[in-house]
Amino acid sequence: MEQRVTARAVVYVDRPPEQVFAYVADVSRHAQWSPKPFRVGDLPPTGELVVGSTFTSYGHLPGRSEHRNEVRVLELEPSERLVLESVDASGTYRSTFVVAPRGGGSTVLRELDLPRPDGVLGVTMPLFIRSVLGRDMSRGLRNLSTQLGSRPRE
Image (cartoon, rainbow, N blue to C red):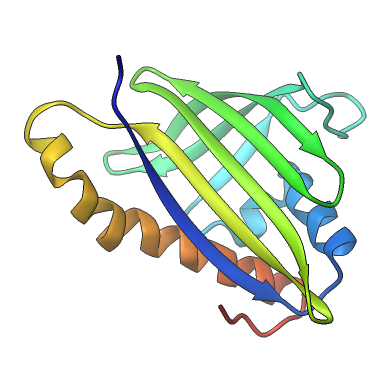
């Protein structure tokens, strides 16, 4: 059975959950808050996602500025939860966004579930998650908060 690891990041956004979720669920806008170059293509004709919708994402990985993923919407609970599954040559990744009310605003939790590589890479994976992936995810969520006109905080 494949071993998996999870990275998590959270941010507070001073906006209501419905507004925050609408922004998160609009994957055509993810490039606005991504910490690295990112774009999507092949979106559904209406642009609106439903469970089962598919699209293609192109992101930046070391040595590959146009890394391609085939993405499918696994879960979509309006104003609360979005789960995207992406597949590339290295495996299947699951990105979960949970938006919850907090005070007069919202918290956004992002979890990325990914395959744990074999060998030395697998052993160093916790360090990679803390030092690189977790940092980038946190930076992306802070960017999201800023894009929504909020001062990011955890």
